[in-house]
Image: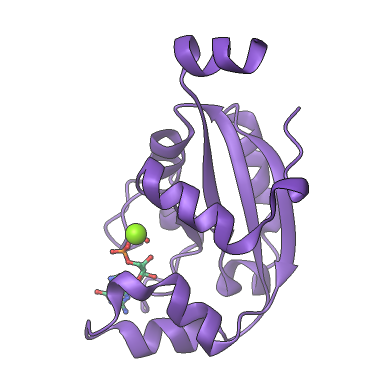
Length: 152
Ligand code: GDP
Ligand code: MG
């Protein structure tokens, strides 16, 4: 069928994305979404929510024990954020390229993190994006049920 054809020959992927609390507070949701859409990524699911500590700790479980973990959880629970699913060709890698490096101070000019991330606080780097197909599947499932996804 059509879905199979796309996945096999065009590598249509889904990735999980967060517009983090600092970017929501800075009123740049629209500017960030515009970049995704102009790059050919389609938003197929989206909601605004504020994480509990338990939810944030579960989401970032792989980083438990690292020196920045407590600060990361403080930051991710500090205000509302946008969680969403982006779909498109090579979406996981494409999104990571648009985001730029983890530390906004080191991210390439023109990337989302360089433009909207905090240069004082690495945690407040404006966006999250899945780093692999396995993470993408886990992270999408963490926030969305199948009937909350609306592929075009
Ligand atoms: P990402 O995949 O680029 O988001 O980076 P990681 O998966 O390594 O880290 C997850 C998140 O933890 C990052 O997006 C940052 O918000 C935060 N983080 C990572 N490294 C550091 C650090 O060295 N210091 C601080 N304060 N936060 C960090
Ligand atoms: Mg990561």
